[in-house]
Length: 298
Image (cartoon, rainbow, N blue to C red; front, side, top):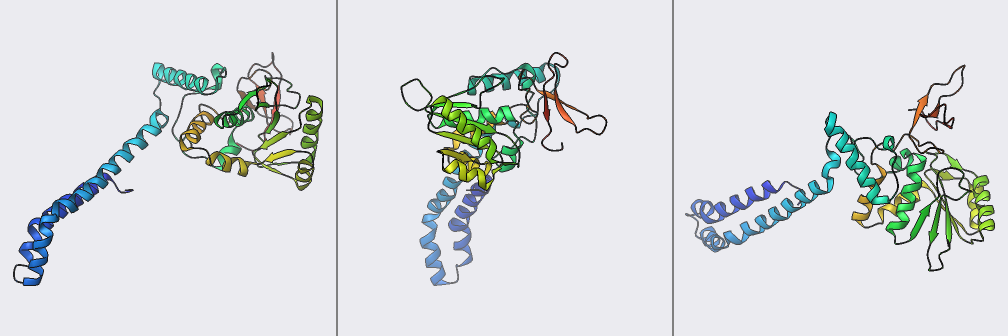
């Protein structure tokens, strides 16, 4: 059924014609083959029907794939079409996450959007979108969750609510650090937050990996470490519709450029001067002087 449906239709026609008329004409001088052809001829419609059934399934599968890809594969035009496309993306993002989306945080969709989840995609997602993707993952599992507001988060990025008490039962810290290792220090700080909040269970999620020291410390203190590879595996275990919806949310608009931790707007690349490294600066400079280091070139 992976072949185009038109091939199955052609095979159905060839099978019917071949068994009904061609084969009997070819074996007319051989009594044994003539008898065999005579037995197969009445079944020509049955064999052709099998190929037609396969063609119908292939046709349905092809149309379903086109619907799933939807408008995400379309390249927006210019002018009013471009603006409407951006607005539609913003509305889709709001409808999925229930989160406010800054005007310049969502750009128009373009060609080359990832079609599947990969570890490279997880490591490409900017820090704020990564937090939101983690939160939406828990929502897709039926766990009520909340992200913290912009600004100092007190070491908590997401709160999970798994009972009816109205109080958080677990907390989550997220680090979108590309391929970098998370050492023991951030994990130890998370334990301090757990103690302060009187919460006995926490999750630490990163796009990268963890040092052995961090793993040992987390194991001894009821902290579950989820690295990029494990998160990818968790996403792939979701039902297909949930995984696809999370992918659409993760890659809507500009998902690579980091958001300003203070304002929430997309930042801009700034060339370092005097031999200093390039960095991300807030577009609202000088009103906002927030900076972020560039974790990798490009």
